[in-house]
Image 1 (cartoon, helix red, strand yellow):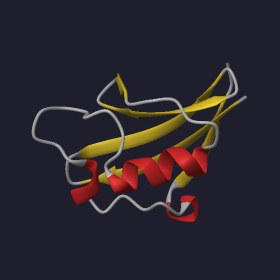
Image 2 (cartoon, one colour; image 1 turned 60 degrees about the vertical axis):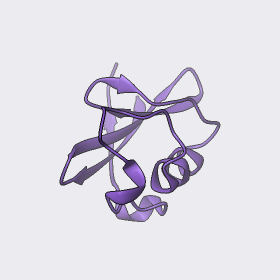
Image 3 (cartoon, one colour; image 1 turned 90 degrees about the vertical axis):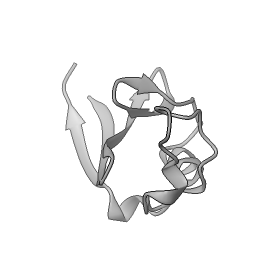
Image 4 (cartoon, one colour; image 1 turned 135 degrees about the horizontal axis):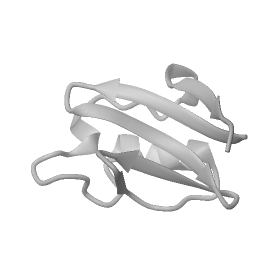
Length: 78
């Protein structure tokens, strides 16, 4: 089972997915980085310190929380 966190914004859905022991934030199918913890990935998204997802989208301006309790946690069987 992989850990997945989901947060919806006005620009679309952001996810944080566990892969090989690392946590990757995604937007629109784009991998925005690799972090040791899901909390670190959320914090970097909230601060706008990830790779830029799509032209004109600044994650820091979308109200993405750095607290994972505000994200929806789901598990995927793989």
